Length: 543
Image (cartoon, rainbow, N blue to C red; front, side, top):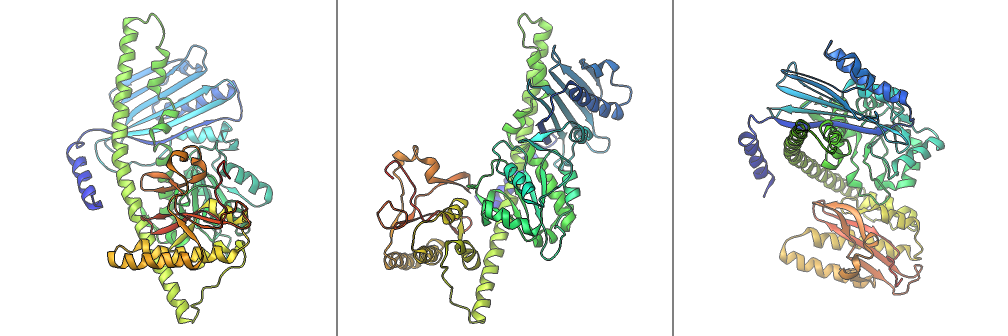
């Protein structure tokens, strides 16, 4: 099915099945621990939430609510409630009110929890609407109060409303520790200085304010970007004024395409329904981070809803009939809310996915155009000979300079080059050149007659270099045992991981000084040869 047909079907689905049916959209969510474990902090959090509600709806918050006691207020277009358990370790708040200007209903939830060894504070905004209009990416005021006063942390790093300058080795190490921490739950946005200036493509202070509680914002001077590249590899790095978002789960094995990189020219030329240029792109990035915070059911489930907490508090033996009916009503309300939210999320995700596909096609076309123009410029200058590196340290830059539209190094491959023992650097380079020329030509061409000719050219190239080509690196019945060794994090279609099957082989000894393996795969969507690992062979028990 082509994209236009899918778009038409989704539009018709929205127009008919979901027309005039309220749809719940999760707008944002934050659920973070505190570096402190104090009753005073939990009291302040409850007070901040209730003060926010009292300011919006004067006279409706009873004084006893400030002591952590439960209450409910229900009137046409407005519901406010709080509940807590008997020992006060959990306090939950919920408000539901009509938008004063639009046909929307806003739902705001808060959670204050004593988890035993630490305190945790949660905030969630959602919106129910009849229309398909964009929902503002907003957070309740008390989230800013939480961040300013409650010492919230993410993987031990402070969550703030300000950007962080990475200006020395000590702050660089703290930044790298957070970046690669498996405990990190918030994205990290890295801004780098524009060439020949100390400015950034986006305003760091505004971006940090707009995304507080949803992301960390770091500013890297030009000198520190080299250190970042040394630490994570050039493909996973960011420099020359670009902006990169590193999502949770980042590691040195990550797929570079999953951690979005945007170049300064793209930011300057940005245009959408909200405006143009850097300011509009900053707003777009803020909306994306709001969406990311609620993007999956597993994320939503991390912060228990007000209704689920109420339901849990009613889970006790010998319930009265009234309590049993109330519990069943709560179950029904939760079920309906979840159904509406994920129905909407599925439709919105389809639209977002199509947007990313269009963006990817545009960037791929730009990359091919730039590579073609660079090749023509070199030909015009008589610079047609592609030099061969003599050191493993030069291979990544060599690929970026001459084969970036055909060949890419995965993070594992970059690390493999740093640890390489194979003594014939020239053979490694010639093998990569063969993959970027004969192999790429064969895979990118779909003409049957041409394909046969190009296949023969590829086979001849392999023979001329005295290599062996194998399409399988490990038998399927042994893959489960060595999956982490023979797979890389690289998304193609719906699959986030790929098996490193095809490989070029030189030598049969197990001594890495005298044998070479280049494991790779073909990305048909991006028209790229992805080098997954080189030049050492991947180990098994037999190795």
